[in-house]
Length: 328
Ligand code: DAH
Image 1 (cartoon, rainbow, N blue to C red):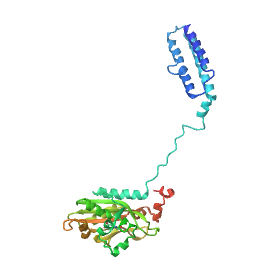
Image 2: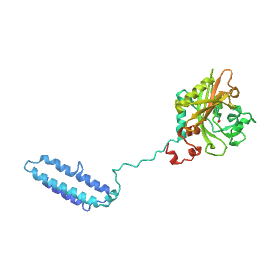
Image 3: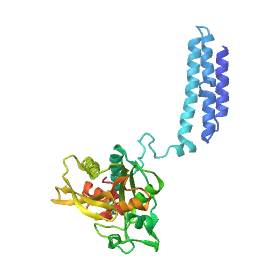
Image 4: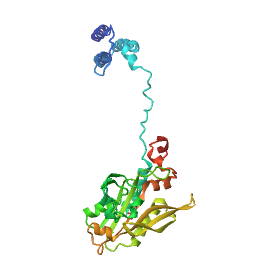
């Protein structure tokens, strides 16, 4: 029987090829493909079974199965003991789920900032940015702080030189916006601000503000109240009690501060400053105060963040302690 001879010849070549059994994984794989692969020698023998007479088929089948078993067992025995295989056979369990990479958290200050931004963007404000290092004109003079005016004492300033400061508030960007663009304007300006003061649980050298500026014809204090009331209720809930309290800022007239009632602390807490843009400010950027009116506001993000999340020390927000940050 021709098939019988073919079987014997494959057995012979296999014995020659597999003794000594290869040690590197590529040669083992090549050997496996040659004999056991889908187009390997064994598969060829099996497919020639169909050409064999019914009488010879049982014998041929059993010879072929024997060969297959021999080849398989040589692989089995040698693969178990081959050095290459021991490397692959380390302690790892590749069926275990992978380790998760820590993906971090959005900082609570950023979360608060994102929320404030989205509330104002929903009512048509765009977001603008401005310089953190600025000149006296934009940070003070154009905002109606005269050179010796006591209002400058409200801001403990880091000076880079006598005319250059780390901005003490985001109000400097009001001036940049009005210099660069024609009204109407409707912007919020998030950003970092700096104050030269001792750190404590309630103050830090660096913090974040969001400035608002709305300039148009026929803007009134009622518009200011409407927008800021909407903002506070969106941020802290519709039932939040709030009040506008008269105040003073050099760049707004009249000016106010907004307080919200804290049930937890049983007291009014200041959350932002605001007012109608002072005509002197419009004049400093060549906008005609008889035609254009506007309101502005400024709020401290850390303060709002602390109120929202019940954080009682601002310094926690700047220490980068994961145990703290992971809670948000
Ligand atoms: N710039 C003020 C500050 O840093 C906050 C502020 C108050 C901004 C009233 C305004 C405003 O635009 O109208 O304390």
